[in-house]
Image: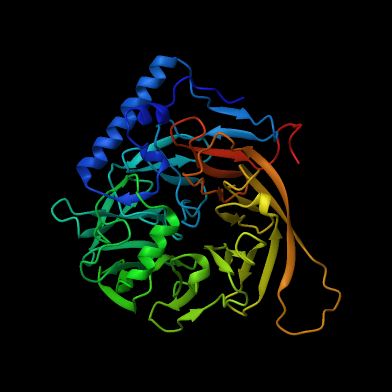
Length: 453
């Protein structure tokens, strides 16, 4: 059973009228304020632990699901990476995560022991920390201490800890993905000094913090989309440090992701409210083949939260229309074939993911009624009895299995679920115990549970 804290870090910070840095979307802000808020949070965590004298549970079997949950990190404020960013070494034995000081830690997946790799802060946002597909290397960028509009790209050997500066980046730029053979990185920046939807200088590469925001998400996204700020997508050569522009646009470009199998293929997104943009695109690293892959066929249709699977196919969340019906959909970049798995709205998740062997999917739950769970999804294809037609979408459905009760989790923090490479665990981050920690849940159920289904 989970421990009920008489006082939580969240509650203490609320009394101090400080928003808990671990519950609010990551945005850029000055380093001094970042360090101040991080320090307050850590002091509060220590104070609460001392006052209650109750240990934070290391593992337990969820009574509602029968699955064993393990707390992987000890430091409050540590977090796993965004759901579509590679966090695992090529041998599948180690995983990187972000530490409370916005540095980088490494977790041994065979012993569940952790260690510090890069002291914080390193910054930039989701995608600022990514592990290579070919070597045990983590790539990250960090802001200049002299000018917050400039950053540099770095790498660190996960085994030895040796750090290496790769390149100084263009003004207001960051790098967010590394290609399959670790020859190129990709990033973006906003041209000029236009301010983004948060009122800060868009693209500033200062270290990350967590700040309260006066506008809700829909308002912020609409405001940013309407600005039509000029953007550049560029590649950086990881050997020479040279950069090359491959796309210029006044659309809001985001979520740059290299294919895990094709080093020349990149996916990116037009950001904004899902029904208002042509969301998903692919492009080659030489700037050719710019292609929209999810053409809309219904009013209020929306798609997003896309990722590559281990085989180099694209998956995304697809709504027909928004808040009515939904699928986890795939697009085969080689032949254009599509598979759509239907899921029930009460089992909706902020993000979905797929196991390396393709046999299972997972979701991190959401604020939808009854959806506060970490889910396993067992995919079932609908049998095709010789349908008439060409280029038809293959339909399927998800059979859901609840694996972690997330009713004590504040979903302002996205859990961002990952399968471990061996498929034995789901990794996620959560504030269910107060501060944010990294957790794992065993995919195989440990015991029978009355609430499991």
